[in-house]
Length: 42
Image (cartoon, rainbow, N blue to C red; front, top):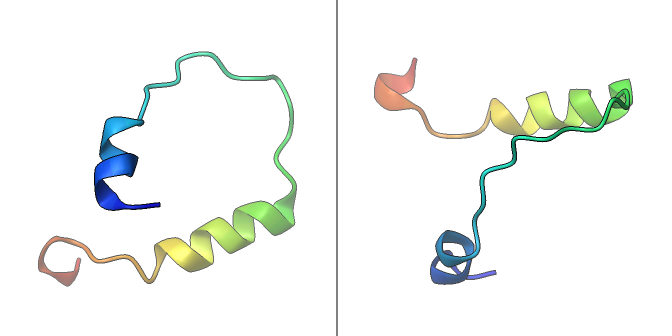
C-alpha cells in the first residue's frame, strides 16, 4: 500500500465489537509499536 493510498482510504472507526483481542495479537502490536518513531525519542 502506498502512502497516498493509505491517506486517501483512511477512516475513523467509532463502533467496536464486544470481542476480546487474543493476547498474542496484543503482544505483537506492542512489539511493533516499540519500533515506531516518536517525538524526541520519548
